[in-house]
Amino acid sequence: MSLDNYFRLLRSNQHKRLINPVKRVDKFSSDSEDDTSDQPKQSFSDMMNEYLDEEFDAEDI
Image (cartoon, rainbow, N blue to C red):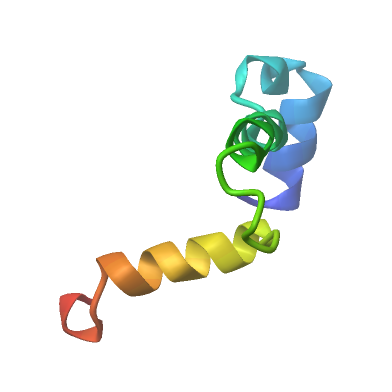
């Protein structure tokens, strides 16, 4: 997405209809803290890197 399109989206208030990923991650992490309190906290990018490493091989690309 170009910056022009991004700012146009913000000005039009259409971004309010989009899913807010920060809230979803916070909600997920607060629910899972009780179950996995012994695991260190991971950043979102670390979790995504793990997921992508598990799901996709270099041959798939």
